[in-house]
Image (cartoon, rainbow, N blue to C red):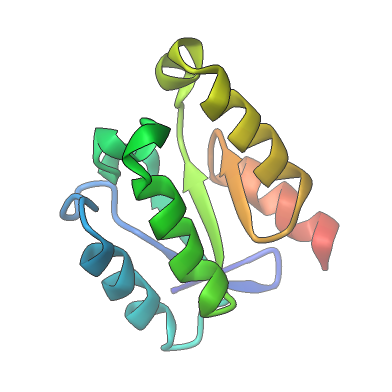
Length: 118
């Protein structure tokens, strides 16, 4: 757990296990209950199916965080996936307009978003 811009954030280790199932997402939700309001997940930990919207995995993961009233930040370069999918570009743009799920390039950008919302 880290204090980032005055917000308790569970910053997941980039070398941790992959997030490939709904159960993996729920494990992160459970870990956040130790006091975090935001979970920052390195994009590299997400199974590639997350970025293929037809699998519905991204929606399932994002919905888990919404249901438990936790913010989710996907941190890292996802440009390769964005180049291949207009639907993913639209999802990222729409998510970043709101306050529940963010796609940010790095933790500094997450800090900027957090400062803007507090």
